[in-house]
Length: 409
Image 1: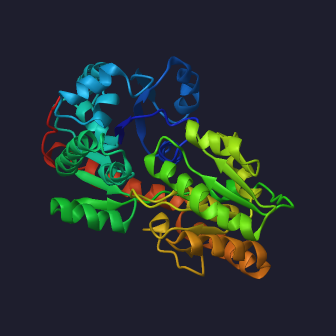
Image 2: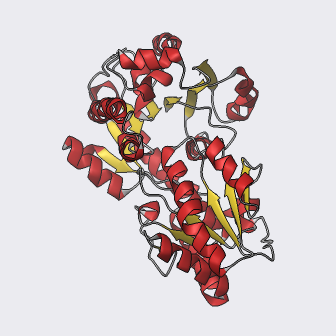
């Protein structure tokens, strides 16, 4: 089957959950389908990674969006556009013309778009389209807006209304919507009253790759925080951890260390490492396994957003016990006390993290149960097979399957 895939990022290097997901699915599906990748990049340096993706794609074409999101040009455009800022900052008119030319020149069976904000790049066409929503964007921004300074809230709330409007529009407009969990499916199904068009293709993890790295725990009790900081829920999570959980842990474990790992740490996050010598902000690391295998427990106090969390799956694949908020493990169908420990309370979260570190039997049980659970339920091989079945279901029905995509550019 001939597939055109659209992504708002180049799926390599593996710096974010979206990149990890797309790259691994490309690897698994490349032997079954001919995939052409059209991706957005922020700067020309990213072109050095194209050869890695050409191993799995028939063609790779990239289009540069603005390197920095909050430019005067983007802000003014968003203020006077029906589109939200999230679409404007990822909107590249040249991509529309290139996609139109590609569809005119080649016969494609299917279009696969990652994120709703890639959909405005599609010209009018009759090709069945799959939209993949890795998270529900407007929910994450709603949480952020509630905590923003009152002066900025009206502007944020106006933009969030645009996000919600266009997310729902493209959920309805696509021929098949793919989400990360049953919870997401139920939530969106009620929003658009069309649950039958939604399928779940969860995120996965390369368990064998994580198993290749041996564990090297430090003498000091070590907590770990992981997450790309371009995503607002991760910024909120690390603030909660450092400001509310971490002080309680240090009271009980004075020699404890906290590692903060993730791409693009903000100045605020970097400052945590400057003001507390027991906090080490590593930012981006070359091998994430080193962070997981060198920590006693992952602490993930995520309180907004949807979708499954790579940090949880990767910690479990590494055999690193997890203490998390309830929403952080939502949709994974895992049990408190068996696979992970959960709480939404800072006091309880600190207590659980300390207990995991001090109770070797509990640590071992969570480590072994986590690895087994991920191996059995979230391996990329099984996940890619499910996506392959959806490709065949939608693609083979051809132009008779769905309605034309609306051109809203």
